[in-house]
Length: 111
Length: 117
Image 1: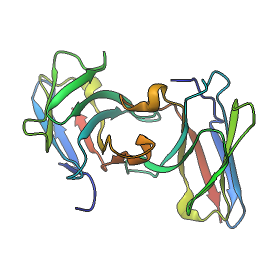
Image 2 (image 1 turned 90 degrees about the vertical axis):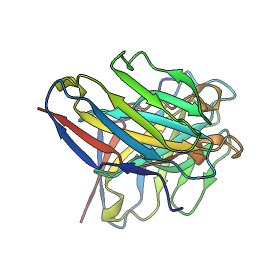
Image 3 (image 1 turned 180 degrees about the vertical axis):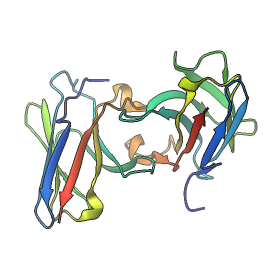
């Protein structure tokens, strides 16, 4: 898997947009970027993934730089329930043989 | 079928005892994965099955660990002669190889928290 680098922790005010960065400078041309999150005492939950183009779904938006060396996950209107650890993953071969999670970013939404 | 189920949710055992965990994946998913997660760390891959075949095992899976998926449906993970270092959350996930962009198809269970005393 391409190595990913994320900040250890971030704070965001409730109702504001939370922007979570991820560096993946060694990503190869066919490796997707996936984001998962893990709320305390639960298993990880899929959020979004992308290859080159920006992506949006009901949970979040994913902005990938043109050189694909970094990306940003955007939670447009953060709520207290978005407090979680967010993992950015760029798996080899699509990740069918297992995902490699790092330590992720602990996002704390402040009331 | 509402998701991946794991049983038990919590297990406390004495060092040296054997423990077994069960995972029931989403019924139409043919791939099943086991992960281990210790405090403050991300999940670490242990092994995965496609149907009943165990296709990959991490070096983290010592000889004391064994996983089965006998009929390609539920899976069990057994730890023999448990050690205090085995204390962790054990997570199961399932996915379908037919899903486009395979990994949005990964659904995790809530895990089994093992404490070895």
